[in-house]
Length: 228
Image 1 (cartoon, rainbow, N blue to C red):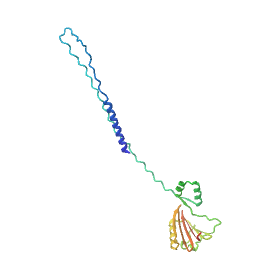
Image 2 (cartoon, one colour; image 1 turned 90 degrees about the horizontal axis):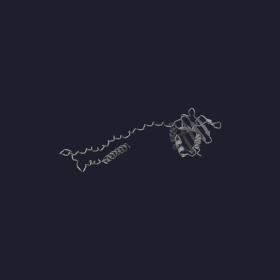
Image 3 (cartoon, helix red, strand yellow; image 1 turned 120 degrees about the horizontal axis):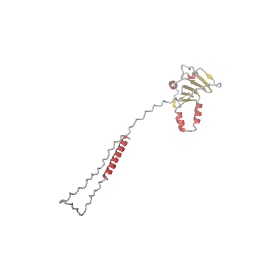
Image 4 (cartoon, rainbow, N blue to C red; image 1 turned 90 degrees about the vertical axis):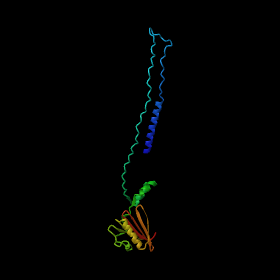
């Protein structure tokens, strides 16, 4: 861009010089006519010599104007754009499955908004028991291979018709990976599934029983039961 401004300024300067030079060349000196003299000479009284002829006045030649040399035009000074501060990373928004369903409905099928919003959402797997649930706070022996130290404070077990669901709170991804390692060591030979909405998931099977481990937003759910 700077080179473009320099070339444009030079072309304008050259065009101005040529224009002024053409105007100066078109101005020519006009011919000066000598004054007419009388055909019949006038005799001077009592004089033997005629007076010397008077020379016509000299006319100064016209001066050709000298075009002024234009000052060079400097290119504009380019200033660097100020650096934009890096935007802070967004904190993932944690939603329950019900809240997620309502949010999806509110987008009214806008695919771009859905894809953009889902990248910053994690599912809350925590569970609040109600009066219809059967809850125990001791670890069933079927899970001894996963939790050799038993349950922690805040953990609980929900009794299901075909087994148990463990709700392990205040856990990390390292806790999830340790449970997966112990499940593989026990022979479940499971598979870690690709994560979505912040959920890490593992599924395995041994002796006709399915084992599923899920983690998201600090909560681990372990389900062991008969396949559906």
